[in-house]
Amino acid sequence: MIKGLALDNWNGRKHFVTSSIEHPSVLKICAWLEKYGLRVTCLPVDSTGRVRPEDLEKEITDHTFLVSIMTANNETGSLQPIADLVRVAHRRGVLFHTDAVQAVGKIPADVEALGIDFLTLSGHKFHGPKGVGALYIRKGIELVPLVEGGGQEGGLRAGTENTVGIAGVGKAAELAGERLADMNQRVRVLRDRLWEGIRRLFPAAKLNGHPEARLPNTLNVSLPGIRGEAMVLALDQKGVLLSSGSACRAGSPKPSHALLNMGLSEEEAHCALRLSLGTANTEAQIDKTLERMEEVIRESIMTVRFVPCR
Image (tube, rainbow, N blue to C red; front, side, top):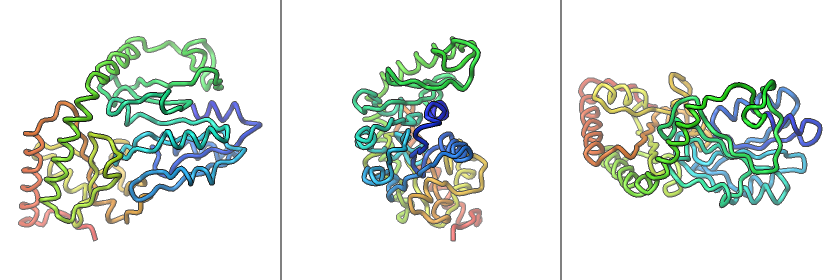
């Protein structure tokens, strides 16, 4: 979508604005845009991982063709002030896209209320089939297709549609909508129960992300003195599945760019854990997770299993 809009504005506006904590699916396009002579601005975020509307106001110009800011960060769950950012962009006549992959299915996503021009989502994030997503385009906006040759997808992408996958995403979205109340009430309580338990075990634990404006199911914490990778491996052996970063960064030795841009040191970022909950989780599972974490701590003291964060 970003490339298609850039191509449509090739001889006009040549400035793209995004944030420093976006998913690689957006940040890697930035390198492509710059390769072909377009200018890219990556807005900073505050210590909670949120873009400040006044920063967008300063950077947007008459040459800006698009602003793209994710709805929710895929590592910390921090929510962006999308409606405020959209107003800034629209005052300057600039289109706005939001990557809502992490948010759809966890919080309400009303394109009319937010005022956005484009929204992207992926079915696997709300239990739909993998490899199938959706792009919302506000009526009246034209994109240059990246794949020519057929009239499929409204002329935007040639090739036979995955009808079964599309139907699957539609049904998954319907079911996710029915689960929203549970996600934003019961799951939120479970997330907070988990955080309080971790703070009892690790009094120095630090919450990464906004304390209030965040997804109801996502918890990102740094545990000083313990490498996240080590905790992930130790808990995996006890049947508890979590991660030390986003799934898209699995296997990467580099610390999270999102956490670094929020002001964490490399050591603090290496000590981070991401815990994601769902509507199938229970209080008993949260308590069991905390028990397993306590066991790992006790065992690590005896076996010196962990590589400490310096």
